[in-house]
Image (cartoon, rainbow, N blue to C red; front, side):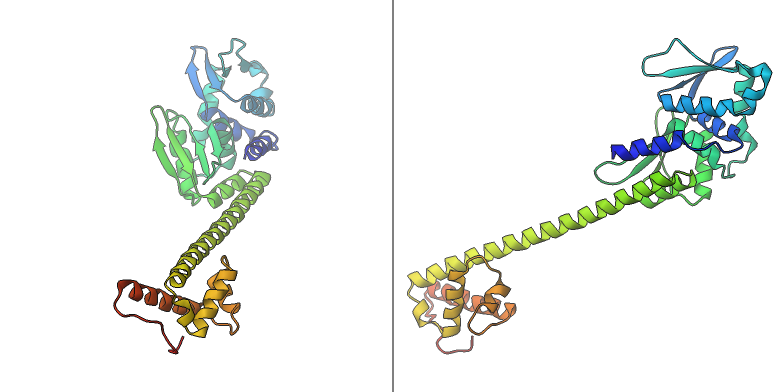
Length: 305
């Protein structure tokens, strides 16, 4: 499943810029943790590819084309371990942070959602099930905005409260495929569909194998019990007095100790059904038990078998 994860992020980072690019920039920024440093905001991310995507979009945005804001965004060269940080000048940062408030919470701005996904979204595919999670910061209203967009689009969200944020989750495979398609990640959506089909086929195959194994074990256990019954009947000297159909059944089992009841019935001189085979074994079992109890039980003579 690691290949699917790589495919998804490759598709996100290479996705064509969609105007207005400021929407996706706002989504990326809204999904990051930041700190007010006085004259600027310091933003943090653990994803290098997210910062690269942001810089690419920034170079195409109105923020970059304004000559007075040429140094509006710059990387922090004093990096923390496992984190990448960058500064945005206070006026521009506030403009970016307020950008998403220009469209209503129920406005389905998928450019903004795509950016938010890149900065705080994750897709997990464990051995069973699917798990798409987005963890936007709660302070800037991104959680409520994202929740409204997805609910208005018909998605069934799970919400889990954490210490510092909320997790919005999709667990249904088909809804995750739809979500990825809405963001424009067609190749990743198809790959997830293929994964679901493969899982379904493998699960079905495993069930068939388990069912076959259970049936084989059941047949073997039944055959072993029948062979033990035959030995007891022989030790008691009862076999020779049995009707021919029951003798044929005993002889067939002894030469074919592992075949199923259906196969056993078809191997007789006069083939019979599985239910008739079961009926005859019950008659033999009843005969044996009556004889062992000493209640006068005797062989079946010429009665119908």
